[in-house]
Length: 309
Image (cartoon, rainbow, N blue to C red; front, side, top):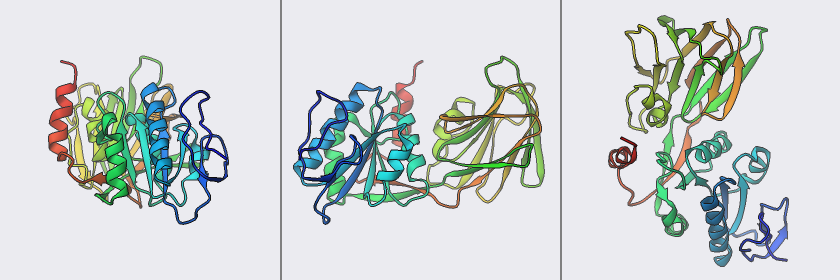
């Protein structure tokens, strides 16, 4: 039996199969084979082409592989156990969805940037085959990145817990009205912000929304939490960096349609009086850092040069 493509009419890679759980997963019949996973952006033609290329590369080398669209959370969770690596084929949004999948597992994450700026994915689209080759030959190191744990404490006593690689954002919804947010660091009240919102960021997320809101860029291997208000009215504290063992608490004092956003893709409403407690997550997210890549601060300079002036 041949591996079936998830997109009819595209290139089909050949591999010996035991079974196919769903059209986007190929499972080989040799238990000694290596196993790579791929998460891709289904709306990006470059990502679809990259998935075809990756499938063909793996099949030609006898490597077991599977692939899912980034929003197929249940299918990714089903296919991930036993994988050596999870490749993200897309931009930062795809990478963050992949990070959510590996948050509770030790599978390393390796990004191929097919978006625009892409601070998270370290390899570009034309480097896909070389990245696959480098990983398969062991030319990589594991990097542990601090993640965030967000506990949403509801007015009815309920609780929802999320893991974020980049940031937790508490902000106004669709209405063009500011919200009033109380922010505390540990037992100390920091400020009451009248603003569009507050970004609570990890070091990895410091190049994202936090940076856009005026926060600093931190070394991604550091262990800190950044708190940055968004368009705050008459605020003197624009951004603070606190230790990773602190807990940042944000309480909604006033604000219609206030929302919490986890890494920019999980959104829920917050009511007045509800609070969000953000701390470092108990487990880091592992990045597969290929040998020979430019240092982080060189990457920052290169990416900033791509930003519109």
